[in-house]
Image (tube, rainbow, N blue to C red; front, side):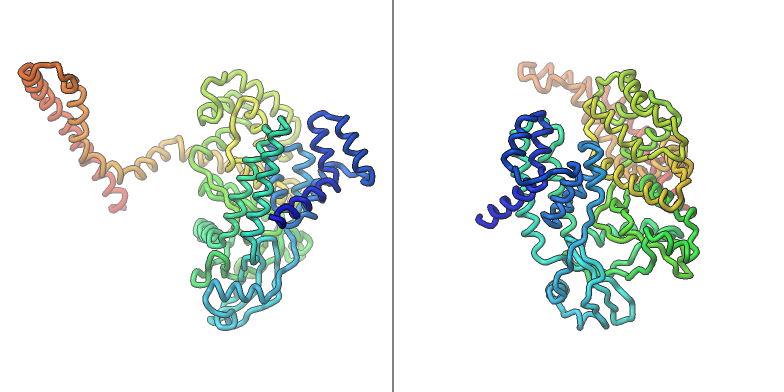
Length: 525
């Protein structure tokens, strides 16, 4: 309890040092209170902008608060642009922990000392972050690997800091009415889930395995192989990848990499993940991306660090594709209709009012060339407009918007003339054709065929039960005489039998057709 109190006192001291109390009181339009606070803390001199002070405070409080700031930097739907832009500069770099602790963690998790498991184990880490650090090693069959080891004691530290954050969020909501719009408790809960997911390295390994399978035959993206015999929840061992960090443009150019192609390939990889797979790497900052310069794989992207991934279902993909296509055709009515049809805008929403709001928000964007338009900003503007109509922005789309901004920034860093619309449009149109065209109908029919084969044999029995309930309402009435009831049952039974014979014939015919369709397409090629 004393340790928690001291930690809370430390947090309050740092927040006061950087004048974050001033941000709170100024946000509730209380200049008098702000002046009082400045008088009370007369020794401090606040000259830096609020966003910089917030970033500096989070950095001083340590890695958990740095990661919290990184999460906040994705919430452009909640926070002011200056704060989001500054928080996006936070880097998750912390000093490495003692190598002997890493050795002990590996021994405990994999059941043997690293010197027994590996032909060689490098005790000097090559990378260190708040959750884990990475060591290079070599398997006994000669394969070079990278070992990711969870930082010891992280769960206890995370649980303690999250508890303090939840307490702070509750207090903020009580004393500051405007805070309810920012949903502090929900943001902390989201952060809690995000951090605990990262603590399970098996989840990261599974994410990498899925992404590798999705791009098994790709000439654009490489994903390291996971060696499952050496993986646990606190240690994972993967194929060692060699390449040049994508941010080192001079080195890439000197190696002969075509930067324009690399830029387009990055966009293609992203939209393939989103619209083909509905499963995307959601932490695509430059530190997690290499470019291969090996002869066999020259110019291919290499993805690393799979702790954060996003998933989209067909409704999400349909929403995105329809909105993007309609937006770039300036069909604002279709944008409004897509919001309502998706169920994200209340059914009572007037299409013309939402259309007018979308037009007023997005039309100024078209003053610029298409190549200068940001997909991430388009999505953000749609989110902002939607909020006025009581639309709850889905978490997976916020994650997508943040990733899209990363991809755009990276793509235009490699090629300032990158036209994202030109690159993305074919994927959007192809996906729409697959979903709403004849091809989409056939594919869905094939996918549902096994279910039809299971359901159709049961159809006669189900129909008979339904007809009995419909034809014999008096069975539930105890006041009807038994003789009259028997006569009614016999008459209704004869009528039901005639109807059931016809329906059974039709159902069996449809069942045979469905089974034939299934055998033809799934076993006959």
